[in-house]
Length: 626
Ligand code: ADP
Image 1 (cartoon, rainbow, N blue to C red):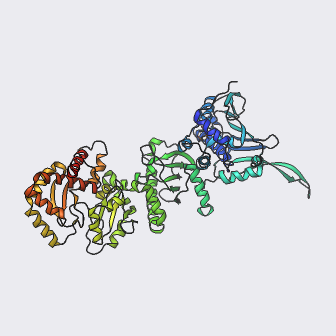
Image 2: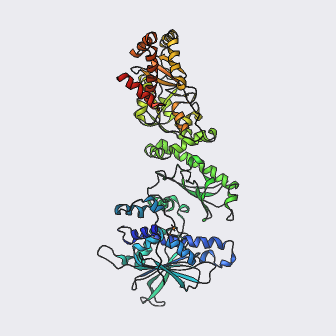
Image 3: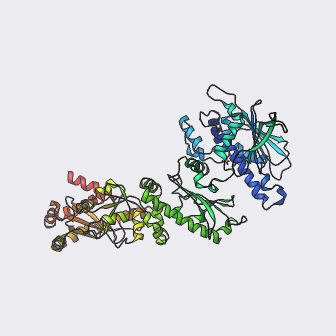
């Protein structure tokens, strides 16, 4: 018989398993039982609409048997089975390469993480077995096939005998070594406790024959050997159990296994709802965003069960986009099993469920924000951008649902604050909510305008997320307070007197300012003096709704080439440079022209903007040096 080679990726994973130093090798059993349960699910689901399957709900089961003498452990199921082709495709290649994608290099220390973090599936059998045989007969097939492998050399597939539909996984358990007692996986009691630990909620019975002793009937104290068929798992899905019976560890393990996360969730929301819609839901808020979360590959959704039977793994309609980070499942009493993916969308019950789920998530997040700030901030670091998208998208249709969940970094102790907290701290003289947008908090702090706000004793919100400004524009006024960009012309904290004196100075020097504006072409729409700059010589101020930061964001998107913020160059009237400019206007307009360009370039750099013509700037600076 020809030995076939494993595909390269599979071989890597297989090698990892064979040479594993992982200490929880016992999880192989969980993996094999999960696979068996999935296979049974498939056939059971079919049996609901197809009488020829010939099995009732109660007939489906998974069976373990251990033969210590020959070191054989068998996991069998009467599920859907595999054809020769499926054996080849499913077991010769790794189906879910998430584990390898995640793990880019092959170092030992990382191996442990990968095994613990992800389900590694069928190949985990090679952590405890030196030979694995799979005999499988697919539903609808008359014949069976045998897949066999001792690991690295490859595998063989040949025709075989099997009486009924299903799959048998036969493990030849490795010999014990100094460090590893593989024999434990041949011990009925040990196996039974592993099933309880990892596979208790599997919905089909996991059975095993136990050798026991039984009292001989009619005698007082005579015993005889007997065999008892025991079901090892309780079969109650985790979400159907009472909250009080479930430990945090059970919730977390279920999450990690089912949703392939290595980190425990930040929050578990388990609830049963009765009334218009009757359902149980088990929802999780992850502690970090999946690597593809902010990409178009990410698919939101909750698993949907009807009376314990899986209808779809990802029902997108159950979650609004702004809560797309939530993982979990819904099990409803009201949905028909025959419901298809297409009709789901229009299902009244489903829409009702979606609505209550959304409310539940919202109220739990609000609770977390109030009572568990540290975790909420961790949550917000991971998913805050998505919430802000929620405010902004669909023309702000959902903004009210999300607004009070938003946090912003603030100059007040450099911490996160809610808008509500910000407003509650505002001094009486403060009329608006002040913010500045930039790449980082440090860069924002370097803005000349930032000094002016802080000098007034006002708190400043730092917008470092590209969607921030767009979101708050959609949000509009909060509690009667508008959001004002400190780099916008409205942000003027000067007294009436100061304003008057600046106005006079601007009028007096109108020709100078017009000249400079002309020099700068379409870079600016105005040049003027200001009193608000403290020690700084210049700054740029945006006029109209579009800030320079928004311009930067929009320009990075396709189809937005023509977008331009309208900017005014403001010159510190109290800085010596002001007098210099006035003098130059009288004596040397060529130099004034260069100085206008230099000052504008400085203001752009300070404001975190790029320079349109760096070569020209360089030439101007050299001109000063020579
Ligand atoms: P995963 O279960 O994550 O897809 P596995 O390596 O565990 O990855 O299994 C690969 C595939 O082999 C499964 O997706 C399934 O199609 C098939 N398979 C494994 N075990 C069984 C089984 N007991 N019965 C039927 N098919 C199985």
